[in-house]
Image 1 (cartoon, one colour):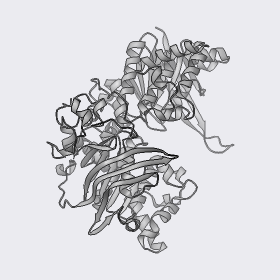
Image 2 (tube, chains in turn cyan, blue):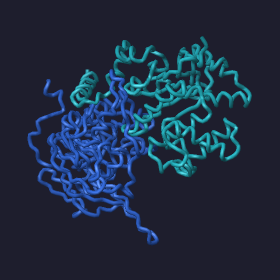
Image 3 (cartoon, one colour):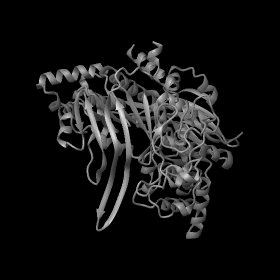
Image 4 (cartoon, chains in turn cyan, blue):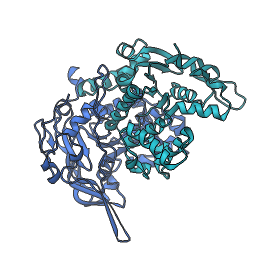
Length: 281
Length: 342
């Protein structure tokens, strides 16, 4: 069975302190997991800020080089990419979706320019009609159309729409893997579900695997198939999402689960009181 | 103990601290003969009682922040109050914010304070935290320097912060610590009325829970009223006593929080509650189609009708009034209570 993505004892250190200091912190410490090529899935990486989950995303996208271990995508070790052709072929297969769509798009550039640029770069679309066709196809997949988006600037769209445009941009080169780093934390709670449902549809219809990075266990439970929970760079729990999140065993995962506010006033107020009582002790 | 676990506390004196009547505040641009009005707050009436946490929920650009700026009297052109009144009653001291502008200055920070969104932009990044306390609170306390410092330190300790944070720069503190500092800043004068604008939005889940617990604890100790604004309904569920839902510059529904979560009357409220994901439940959650309306050119009639699943003809023609609802609140909908929540 072949793997789409395989992480083999990956470690990343960042130096801390002055120029001559030898101290470093391990942002990611000996993490291994693999995604199957034949079975698309939504793989959630859950943790607080500082747990190393964004560093993982950067390494999978090839923006950071690991200090130890290997990342193998589709049989190719990401660390060995040297030529521009190889890098572009890799980028076409692994696409990112970022946290804040209002920061991902330059407010002075119409959003369609990013879509056209992606079509040009990864699909070799040189004439305008070809670019528009590819862009429109991708936008249709996320429930929008080019007619709605053309010539619009980021401030003219709502956060939910803009994040869907960001997903459409990632879909243009027909990637095999989408790395979504906190894609819903900056989107309004009422629009959050439209993005989350979209990821589900991408997995089921387009057979795209998605690495979903989040600190929100409720949405992770809702969409993901497998989950790993990270604390300070170390994977403390992993496995099938429902099994892990229904019965977390590590104290940190239990704390994270309890931190999810239930949408019920009585239970939520009780959770808050429990937490403050525990903090007072 | 069990009584304390619920959000329904008996409100002994139901005196109103804040009364808003038919408030209209528009952003008006009148340049070169082109007039553009953005009706961010359009005919809102509400009251906030003593010793309660009053939540305001709504999407971005629904006018939440404009409403609380108007309440705090912190508006600047091009925003203007067109109609209506905002009045406070601080233990017998009556203040009409827009009729007598001078009075508000004295009440600010002493009676009314503000926990702002984005703690990093509140605190000056190049000055130590103690300067923030001096700048904000010193002149309102009427104490000398040494007594003021002692008071601030004891207040920080009550909130579980080390007094050493006064000597720290904002970037030396974590996001949760900074947000606690802004809460300490807002509560050091023990005000009767606190406005909290998205105080937990940028925080991690664990820190969010701590900050919510802190706000609740401070509110209970001071017996003050809190207006709590956020778009996250599960935060409202955790902390508020009564909840108002804003949609496109108007109130859609207002009710006690528990009753609203049990039986929402307005279809928009029902949608907001039904779309929340829960652990242990993987049934598909529907998301509302369409996009939030533009406040410069809002839809006719009920502003929610283009996105409403149960809209009828009347909804696009007439504006529904805020009328008493079946669950002890108010609702603005012709078909109130007809939508079922899963």
